[in-house]
Length: 107
Image 1 (tube, rainbow, N blue to C red):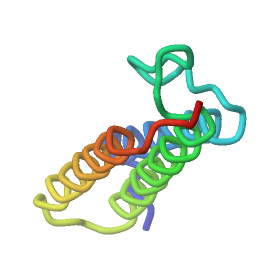
Image 2: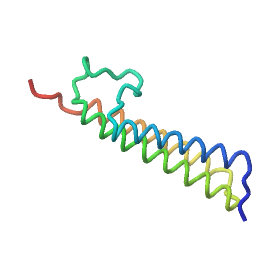
Image 3: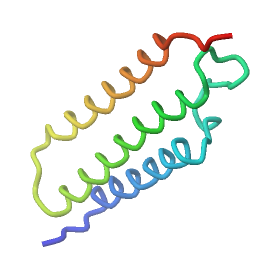
Image 4: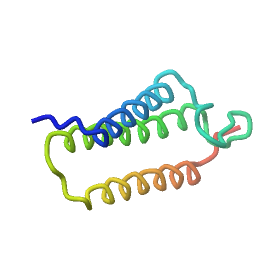
């Protein structure tokens, strides 16, 4: 039933950690966890960054947890890891695009 292989445990543990980071960014406002982001020099309001980045990181973390659980319950094809990796890459690229095209805050 439950395999509990080290690979599945690594995916679940990584997903829980990433989900925790997403919660801290979205709900606690810890945007300082985002590499290269500074409240003082950003044109995008902090609450917008907090919402966009938090949502993206939460989605990625939950997807990784689900993948880890599924890989411990069933034998998944080897290409599923590449699909998950591509989905994460697309989510991050979408976040970067959305943050860079966000209109600046009014002054």
